[in-house]
Image (cartoon, rainbow, N blue to C red; front, side, top):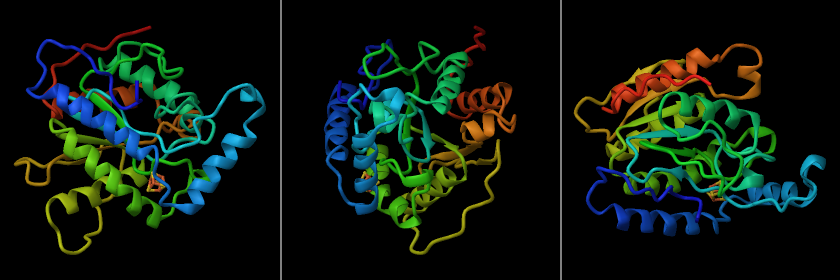
Length: 259
Ligand code: SF4
């Protein structure tokens, strides 16, 4: 699999979904070749070369990480950027680190994933109704991409959204993603000048009732260890956001699963 889509066969698939899946795979291949940000290209390669001792036997992905999930998704989850030894190692968003462990367990509990874990490409994980991507697709030093790198990488987010025709809601994992989604909305609406985004907060909503700006936004604290270990983001909190996402996106309630 290219890393882009689940390629699921489901009961009620939108018309033209097979062509969309093929175009998504093509886009993932293009993203994988991008070298537009010299600082990030250098860093992702350095990390892949040097590796962490625990993964010394693995071959790191070391390239831009494409989005992953259901090509018929109504909900897009947008993160910050691949983690150096997580997605930059495994080649799948949020896969291979503690943030991902927390996020995928929540996606499973709320009916967006068929299993609570994401270990690596080819592990059987499938998303239903959701697609996961990031504002920046290359691992940045200290998890801090620059605004210029964010703006450069927006080209891929826009193309992803063009293919994800059913997306109606973006769940923004953290303030950086919130800002990136806001910029995308302005671009979609044809705004000629930048308008400052509304304040980010956990559970904040920016609703687009008439679809003029393509998608609504829902804020969620990023599932970083810094947030989850300190209790700033708890399981009930992220579950609450994902259940709200189902409502806003018009998806049926799933009933919360428990391990
Ligand atoms: S961050 Fe985005 S734009 Fe920059 S090199 Fe990576 S994929 Fe390309």
